[in-house]
Image 1 (cartoon, rainbow, N blue to C red):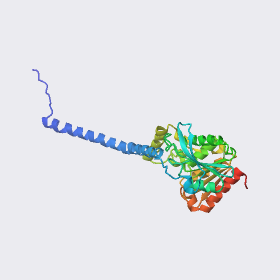
Image 2: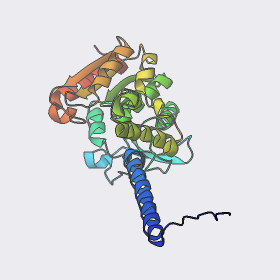
Image 3: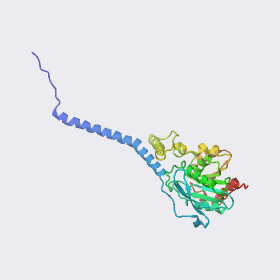
Length: 318
């Protein structure tokens, strides 16, 4: 006698209650995993991208200030051709001692942003040229100092074509990112005979970002690499190019004056640059000064040191 097989079927109630619950738990687990991944990777990556976007897309800081506001009547309103395409506006204040100083803009600054410094130099006999940043001139994104070398070269070429400019007496002084630009431009252009760099980074990737220090949490490391990748995305350049420290030794024997404050975040980079440059570089650390506060903290000594440096380097005065 054959016994028919027994088929065990799950109760209807079990099928209706267990399967949806498991699905909900699975979906909830996936959701938490995705949220954790976003918190560990997505948020710091977005923050790094947003930070770099803000850094390389500053607004134009141009204003209506002209050399006339400082009492000069014989200044020139210039348009200088840019090898990057187009042109940028500049002010030229003639001098009477035969030497000329270039003042590059920082970030998105306009040509009037450092006319107080131009006034100090002009009062001491120097011809001075200030100019608009690439952001103000619609020449592209800021690159935190590297692509800005191109505009320095444009200015050098312009000055060399002027009959009233002595090609052997051209100096340059820049602050912050423009301080880094002055070092990198001087390494490329020997016509720059005297260089002052204030408060610039030594190596942006290592010093400002800490990209290769090997420390920090996963979140911090993700943020740093997002900064690096975003820099390439927005500028088309490698962030490792932002390194005056790598090229400062090419400037010798031309003299360099580095100016930093004791409260400067990039002060360690100043010591590294001085060591890499050699005997031709001098470092003045302004006691109690933060970023850009050198002249405000020590106005008399600031003017004395800057003018004496250029007088000795460009005019041969001891």
